[in-house]
Length: 334
Image (cartoon, rainbow, N blue to C red; front, side):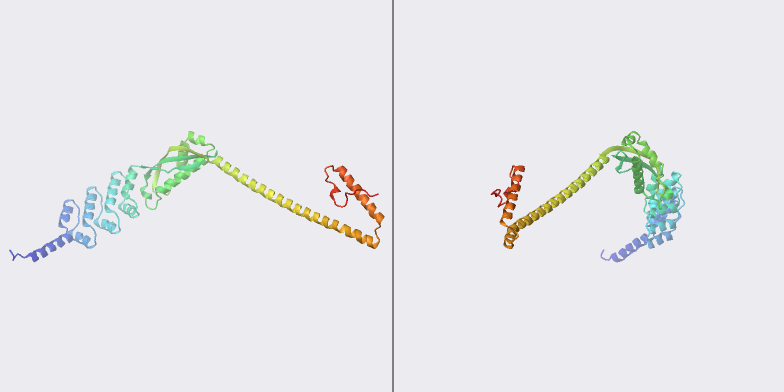
């Protein structure tokens, strides 16, 4: 029992596994019995090119049973390009059963463009519904309306490569809703006839250049939002009030400045009067010394001053006349 050749048997087993890996005989037999013409050498080359023979053969069998004419080289090329071979085969079978014109080249191009080609074919057969987000629009009377629409679309196979997606459809539908509500004189018109929105939006041909064909647009819900017009008027009134208050404050500040300036001028004038009155006694003394003023002239001047103070006292009983000045309280000199 110790003489059993373990190493040669292990080597033989590993060699058998490597042979079966590069020469998938069972897969080749399955392809032959399924009516798929693929040679064992082609399967070996698939292994060398790091292509899954099982995936290619199973896809060929599925396509052959469905009556499609697809070669292994085409499937290998699409696999090496990073495409989803089973999805392409299922899409071709679905399109063929639904009488939708779809070639292998179109299907692979759609798949390599990043779109789910099988889902696109399914959408062509069974249209799907896309719900728009809340679309807010304001009618001409200033009332905001919030609308939710349901858009029924069908995939356009010829526009799947290079065509815009669902986001563009939703954006265009939202734009059409805003335009329709904005052109309405009153929000009551929109609430009474919501079908006008659908008709206006559909008439714009919003599916041009997209990967879908719009079948219908239905308004699912309309809610009344805020009164935008009244809010804008309130904001404008508040702004006007602030402007008026600012102008009034500016006028008040200017009036205060003018009043202070006038007070300063009045004080300055009073100071000059006081200074001038202080010079009068000096002038009288100088007049006496120079002989320009006699004693009788001085008495006459004092009598005139006393008469003036008396008249001021009679005219102003409250004592606001000139009697408050010093030197004039002794009255008229005889």
